[in-house]
Image: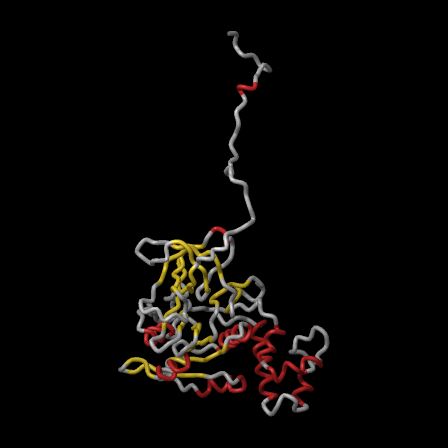
Length: 344
């Protein structure tokens, strides 16, 4: 047979290239996963999620925590501590097992912060909590009211009940600091160290009982010490730098821990700033119901912190009650904290 020449190919020489993406046709339909079991995320570590079977309301005697990863179908959906999820696959919790998170249930609350006040991209911290405990030391390191104000803004924005937990009360009197928040009606508790450990824990336990509470605060304020005393865990404890007066980060990721008397606390890494670029001022005024009605008298686009603001007349006429002037000043202080310089 003569050699094959260019242009004389026949059908037998045609090669078929298989579909590089597979032979199964693509579909937008996703499985319903009706057999998924309910769990709640308690830890997040490098793409692996520790999920408590049954969730925070479960009274599982063995506190079964299942290791899971996100299913591909969730795409970019964020999964954070506190999320209620649906799991499929190996949910025995045995060593080496791995389940899949196929569903994230609707959230009842979402605590967020942004990188800074000019960044509207939010970073989710915890989902489905109902209380935010702002932990601050009265001394060593010195308290930073602007940081506390920012955390209060985040709490009101997320519809979480705020709580001040003041540590190291053995080093300073809390009266001067708490006076700044009297008009806001924010409850506060104190704890102090002694030779017998941490005192004042009974009042803290009572306030946290039966609730899901997020703890936030600067590094070095004693947050991990408090968590260990409340839960019996062994979170790493740092110290305050003698030169800078700043604490060292010891908690590297959020983790939910069960309280012996009922309820959960979520310990979060220490923060040095709390960006609020995602917060809408109109949502913040909702935390002040006696002032919110007065915003109807404000001009269009009012920031509520300007000479033409209708809230001044509303308060002057006594329509916000006897505490109206103090409440208005506190509200405006929080507004300024939202757009002011973070307390690094």
